[in-house]
Length: 99
Image 1 (tube, rainbow, N blue to C red):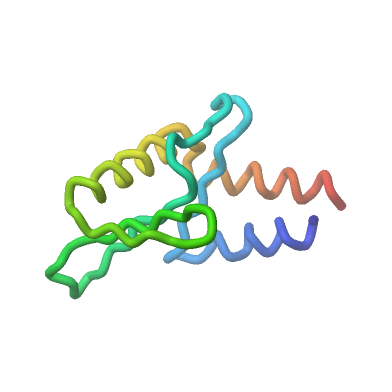
Image 2: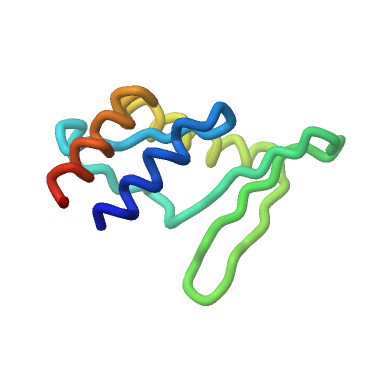
């Protein structure tokens, strides 16, 4: 586990990578939905797509109102998570504990 956390910290130092940890102090978090991603395409005129993972498959949603619900859920998680630098410190501290 030490090696995995050290590698994550190394990757998080890249300028195009943003890592945020949801610390225990933020309280338990359980999304109202399952796992999901919001895909943004720079060259797409169609808009964003929400990929929702459900048992046995993934749904791809492109309705703007539905995508907005997932974007809001993601922002809720980001607001509760530690900022990037603080998250990186947490990851490094956990890696050190596992040496």
